[in-house]
Image (tube, rainbow, N blue to C red; front, side, top):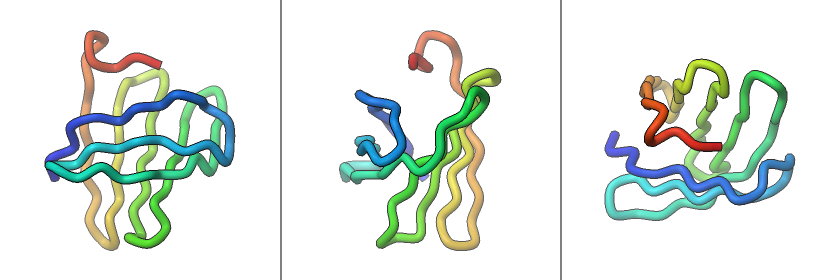
Length: 78
């Protein structure tokens, strides 16, 4: 998976997030936000991304595949 960018402008449940994967831009919807995590989902592709605020880790689930990505402080901003 070529996850390039997750662009979060507003962080309320129901808001949309732009996610760039490869050369494609997807619209994900924020479905959950708490002190620890944010979960965003793209319904038509059965694709969800969980962003951990504390550890700067991203866990992406696409169908039965799970991808984990760690970001450093320079690239992870919320």
